[in-house]
Amino acid sequence: MIFIFIAGYLVIAFEKPLKVNKAATALVTGVLCWTVYILTVPDKEQVLTQLSSHLGEISQILFFLLGAMTIVELIDAHDGFEIITKQIKTTNKRKILWIVSVLAFFLSAILDNLTTTIVMVSLIRKLIDDKKDRWTLAGAIIIAANAGGVWSPIGDVTTTMLWIGRQITAGNIILKLFIPAVVCLLVSLLILRFSFKGNFQKPEIDFEQGGSTPSTEKQRNIVFAVGIIILLLVPIFKMITHLPPVMGILIGLGILWMITEAIHSDKDEEDRKTFTVAYALRKIDTSSILFFLGILLAIAALEATGQLHQASAWMDQKIGNQNAIGISIGVLSAVVDNVPLVAATQGMYSLDMFPTDHYFWELLAFTTGTGGSMLIIGSAAGIAAMGIEKIDFIWYLKKIGWIALIGFFAGVATYILQQQFL
Image (cartoon, rainbow, N blue to C red; front, side):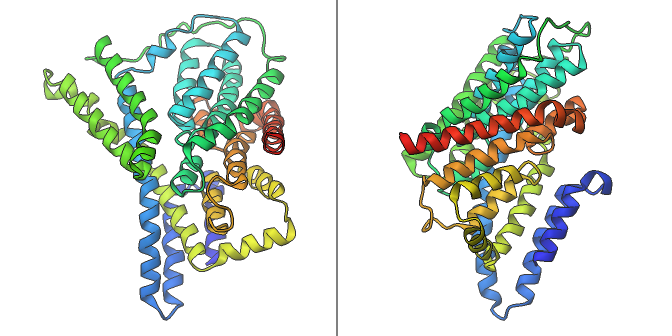
């Protein structure tokens, strides 16, 4: 099983040269791990019970992502994000650096780091003509979006996983990680601003979006306001009802669905199809959700067979220090996807060992969220920016990676000192 898992990881890591989609590899790896498990034990019913339990937990994450991504796609279909982007008028490089970074930082806490990166990188394509200037800003957006995602329960997939898994609570993660996240961003931006100065040229091409039947300003404002309010109310819904976050996102999606159907009821089928949930669902990157499913299934198999607990015992014996373990996992997340890393750590350390809101879980949320900024392929935000702007791997490593590394350790140091003295 371990051999299958490692082999699957290697194929995922070398997705580009092998030309094998990582979602396909993840699904094969996940199912093969459970197949090996059930064929090598006499008690088949126990394996099926364990699988059912893990599928229940995994489905919460997948349906939460599906609901949140659909809401964001509905806002985007109505050009809701234009409400923000139209307010930026400066041509000063340093000003735009701070504006887009701060926007990305707070937007990622409300939405998520992946969606925020897509929106903000699309924005700078409308504002800036020079490719290298856009690359630099894209690097700042990646750092900002990843830092902003760690202090919100819905800002990053891994933070959401920890929240749904009851390792952290919404209020506490905001309280404990906001200042370290701000320090991580500020240190990175203060370094970056020294090499990013002057004015930029706006592109001659008009990148304004819009179809043959664009939404009206009133419709745009309604969908944007309702969508953002729904996303903000998900943690509150959980605290009041004690239902899992997926229930909050699903009822929110249902409400927004009703509203979009109502405000476009006077249009014919052809004109309103781009504003429907069915259209939004087609635009969602379903392969990413299937990738999470495969990886989480593989991790669940390793947890069910006790492999992860053995790994945690080895780390405790060889490393021992909680800070060192958390930082090591964070640095590793720049190379290996942080979703399986966090899933593996959740399996390695039980809530009996580290209860809800324990220091270790908060440190893990921060390191795995911000550690991915060190490499362009280290986070979903980085991969999205790379796909949109065709950013060169080596360029990012030389120009942005070392800045992200300094910001990462500044944020970690802030969290550790904050915990000790406050």
